[in-house]
View: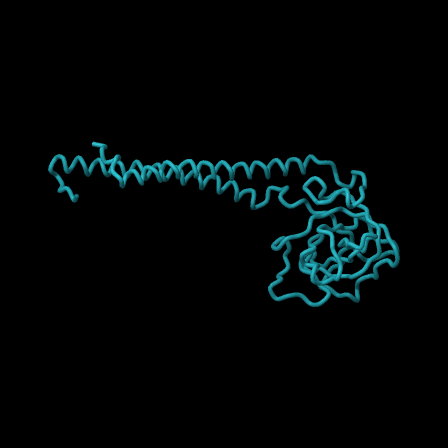
Length: 257
């Protein structure tokens, strides 16, 4: 009754099933592993000591930024140069903007430094002047932002002197010197009674149970469902073919072949 399984057509179907099911299981297992990695990263971030309690280290010792070094206090020395305003940033449930200055270090490379936050729309006249001369800054280290990590709409462009996201890629065409692929946010107000409000460090990207983590879990279920569907359809086709062969043998149907 099942001799049809040895026909060329069914060899192709069987080969597809034999390859498809392991592939679906592999992809489902891989997505599950991605979800478990995110859960582990989240647990490690939750159990990690407060970055502010850890010792301050020179900037170069913490680069490149990882989930371990993100948020750690870093120190750098240089002089402030170009200034940019970063709109669309929220703090304490209010919308405002970051004040970002580039710190030219002794090596010539510049470190983006978020000096603080101000409420409202970006206005350079409201921003306190950056300290002159050589300064030593201590701030929480952050990885460069990527597209989609901010709430700013970049499609229409931004006015001169404003920046959509804080990254070396967005600054490379705006300043004539190299920029670190990282930035720091000052943890303490600048001296002199400045109106700038310190910006707390954000959690490292990929270290929390965000939407992407649960997307991985959803994809896990989808791949295992695909595997089950392939197996179900194979059994259904076999059953239908067997019934057709039985009907032909009993004279209940004509042999189309």
